[in-house]
Length: 271
Image 1 (cartoon, rainbow, N blue to C red):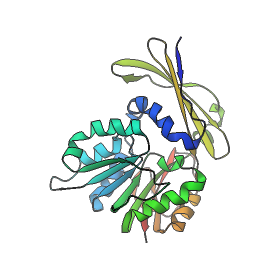
Image 2: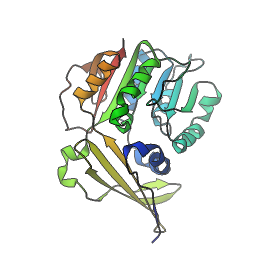
Image 3: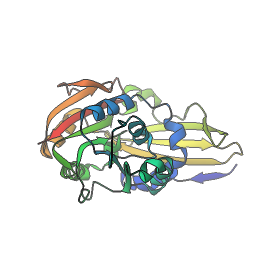
Image 4: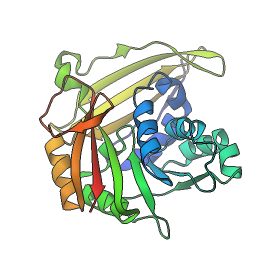
């Protein structure tokens, strides 16, 4: 049995990890559609251009672009990510919108700096992107997004709850998932989750090809509580903070921890 291994040794190496993960990403996330109506509803209220931080292979971008008004003209949406492999797939999938001038795709790390010479009315920080940011860079990350927003601009943070807070008995076990399909191949798909620290959750994935080749990768996410997210948002110039339950508007002012779900969403405006 052949084996190819690419393990993430820490949160900081997420860019390299995503390059390996990109090969399987679309098949693994094909069923994650619960958030898409929320992003579309917000886009229908707020003014473009919009920004997606952590756009991956284009899952949310494609949905928003497919729903854009017929009257929309010019720059409508920008997607950024730190993974070259993810962005390569994204550019291929969205090439028509790029060529028509509606979409810009770029490699950018908001932990380092803001986007120069661009301002947006809304920033979508999608699918747990914020939870891959090391604790010492979280303030930089939010500050640089704020600098890239117009005054009064909106930020949406989709953050995760650790799986093991709800299912501690599953810690360290390899669990079977439904097979995924890539280029017509059925690939066996397993995952194992454990808490490295009380705040860092590491998930490993194993992909077993029909010929027996095993590919493995892992990612670590940092849990940031709703209360701490609120504190960070306030410290970086955001106000009118609300929580969206089950990816639905309107928001509420309840920031208590509730690990019964797998995520929580916060919405705030730049002062």
